[in-house]
View 1 (tube, rainbow over the protein chains, first blue to last red):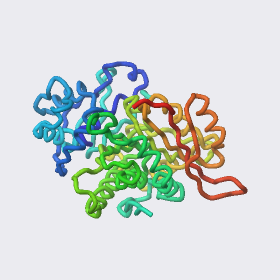
View 2 (view 1 turned 180 degrees about the horizontal axis):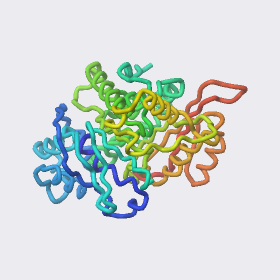
View 3 (view 1 turned 60 degrees about the vertical axis):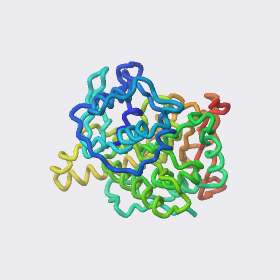
View 4 (view 1 turned 45 degrees about the vertical axis):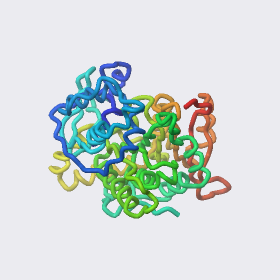
Length: 126
Length: 270
């Protein structure tokens, strides 16, 4: 799963939906793989406006990426080639192959195997 | 006609094989009227306001082989009038997630090699395929386009929802032949068995639509005659939303056998 996925998923437990702690889910023991993709600056420019920046900063930090800027790049900052390249690498080229995503509210861990995260709950949580 | 994604790598032991309903989805989304509607709704921002209409997130719930999501990913320029879309697929069957990832990636790669009109590197990006129940693990308010070809056949019982351990590759590897057969039949039943009126799973998805879709969001849901599409549309209109039939196939006694309903909110401000 590409890192950008973490910006769109949350805990599957119903009671966690209303808790701010359930987003973003937290990566543990993540094994990463880089899959090269032709650099497409326009994609990054058009996707950044919809990214939850605070959540992405948390994710990048957990995956051992260099710290992202405090504020989301906008306007001219989105023409800076290095910024675009760094985000391209993090969001679209980095795949999480193994590891866990943990909910900050209920503590449930979702397992990632061969790049597929399993969000189905055990029967006692359904 | 736009080419259908290759699914020759998919084993249909536990996965729904692309059929009339899948093809109705492809034909409806790529029809002139639907592509025009989607392209207007998801038109890119202008130079002066580039962030006005960012990359749309297209979700398919219950992807199966991935033929529908792969088609949308490959033909995003025709369907949405832009190549920069982001796709994400969910399915309760891990095998279907593996199949979908492959189908979508191949479909994107194939079009990229053929499409000589594309001078940029811009292409659809498949974020991931995740094992999940419908949209229950997606963040509310994030889905721009939701596609759902449900298990719509009326059945006496609704198969239980799989749990995390049903999809554990280590457990399935250790299964006896008869246990594997039972597990395969169970996963296959999930692809079609819809319980009462064939609507039990679809109703759960419909209930989630107002919270899961973004302000510009739109959902496409396939229904069969026994699902009583006219009543379903009335129910949706009761929320103050719009619901229209935008594709249909197979007439039977004056009724369409299958229809695709578009569900959206008018008067959005983007």
